[in-house]
Image (cartoon, rainbow, N blue to C red; front, side):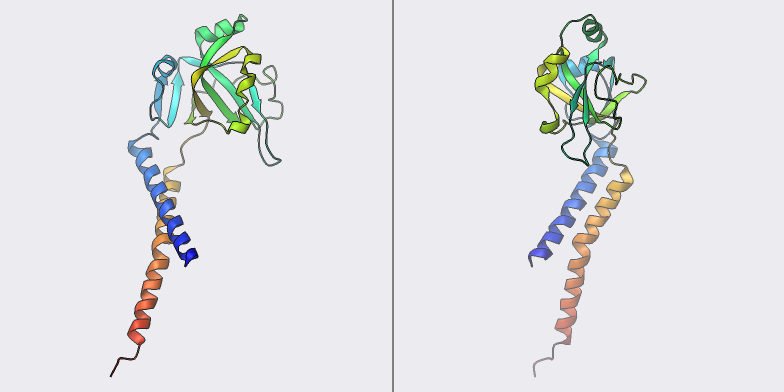
Length: 200
């Protein structure tokens, strides 16, 4: 009985998640929004999930969120700065940052700012969301001459929302998981009832 309800619950969750993602992707927060960095600093990003930031650049300052296990990857965290902030930082000043970009590191040499310059040919684009706390050493930003604002927006760089067809598969898979076993049980019960000898 418990397994039955667990399977039903899992199917409903998959169905709702896939449906919500399909709707958001086509009509809501998963649409790509292009926003100027100055606007993000002043007003935030509201309910946006997928954004491209213009008018800014990835700073050379860098922190590493070390992998927690063998199968894990380091995180690289960089401030996203206005052109003026970047110029001030290069001149030796400490600058304030309210937007941090991060990504999973595939390059074993990318462990220091000198050995891992930011790729400024790529757009500053990704999904809104913070890294796990254990891989987000915020207390070390002062060593990089970066002071975080009270409210920080995190962007997982170079990531995109799940493709629509995966969301559709998730929805249909959840529908099958939730409905097919129940329909089979109903049919089995109906057949058993029909086969019962009638009372005379």
